[in-house]
Image (cartoon, rainbow, N blue to C red; front, side, top):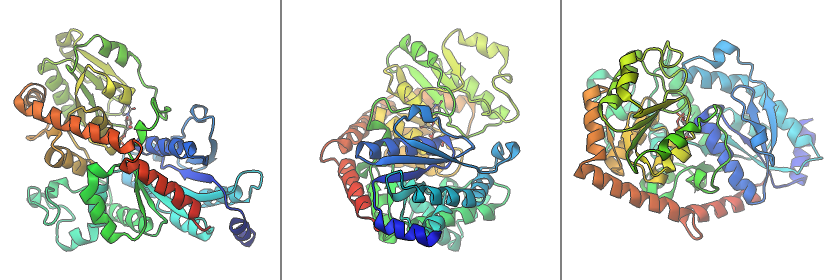
Length: 460
Ligand code: UDP
């Protein structure tokens, strides 16, 4: 069977791409945006996805969808330990993904496949692709600057920065300015060894791939791109920001965005609203949630707040909010379960984004010129937040923890004072650069053309 496929692959070269997103919102969105971009360049698109968190095919009538059975039980799929879940997906998907690829490669009624494009976190897919002699290109949905740190994990261990010691948190990490030890991208997990294994898989299997696509752009992460080019011999394609290629981009939301956000924003003054949202995975304790609530209530600015079901550990939704909180608001706040985030950030009423600094949220904020209040929770978010505050200087970090007085103070600094004005100016410049890189002759536009040429030349 395999030999037959090999011969077919050599004979039949085509313009079909198989894309394989890892099933988390912050990874599905950029993968499907990338699919739209490559489809516009003449490629046929097949999306292979897990049954867990499967995307909605009806939003993508031009693509073909294939589901692979991941075998996750309900309790496994809802486990809070993301590291354990990613590891499990990398184990359980091997056989079904391989079977699916074999079928797709053998299907002569469809256009032949040029390559697989899979999420960097699906590192198992490199060995599967190799065994079927199918080239694999990697999509890294996070930033380049954080990837540089992940790639340096062995060195950071050797130098004693990792595993992180409480006593070293404020220490600068040598050669990684402006990062301090507390900014290193780690995740609380039951078994830290599994996390290190996962990072090694992510980095090494990316190195073994035929190329790496970034949802980033040259003007934003030039130094990090230069660093990583010195360590990786594969070609790089920084072609972001993905979501700005087509407006509005098709929805790959797993939750239904609450459109009342926009009608509520329509009634607010320009640049007055704080938009607070912490992405699809972050979880807070009830005490943290209440500090955020009172920080928002006391700051006297209008706010749009996404409280995702499951955001507060042990709560369904808003039940831990005291009734006097809602009374003091008097319509000044609007709380929803999920927002049409890109539309919200583009709304003229939004003046600041209080974010956990997931990479998509960070890029989306930059593209709309909305300054950030940074509250990173785990993994690459800590690096992204540090770059927002100390490198691009387009946001402020809550410096003395999650306390209501600190929140009020930070919001005031960002919305009102001279410091806030300078931050707004800087993020407007960055927004301009994000626009320029997608135009004819812009760096991302050129890089996309190079990617298209690269895919066409891949030998399968
Ligand atoms: N998002 C959204 N509505 C929300 C919150 C988030 O559409 O209420 C989208 C957001 O636009 C982004 C993605 O979900 O594209 C979250 O990705 P990110 O990398 O920011 O964070 P993650 O969820 O992976 O932690």
